[in-house]
Length: 116
Image 1 (cartoon, rainbow, N blue to C red):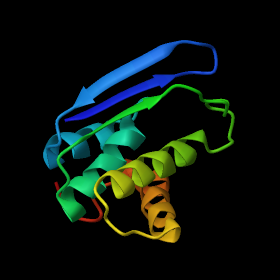
Image 2: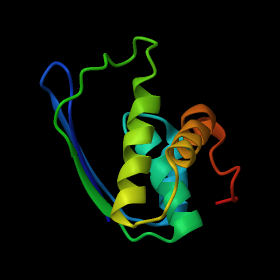
Image 3: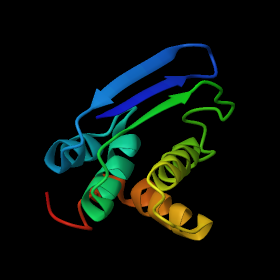
């Protein structure tokens, strides 16, 4: 299970629980919306590293959302780093960033890594 809580800059709180199921994560990643990038990162780690889940509380976000400043890419890096460190996957910082980049810039056609 992937449990995420994020507090937006305006104080609004978003929460989601996602099953670590590659088909469901792939569908959500393709669908768009607030959690699509998180689903994309989870999809990659679920399929490539067979991780079981994670709980992340993002309680201080200072990047403005939907302002063209790539807050989604920063969030993808955050999740990649969390998976890497929690599961001791031995990815370098570059590996974390490459994973996040792949999701951040290909999430609309996400399952390019493996078809869902």
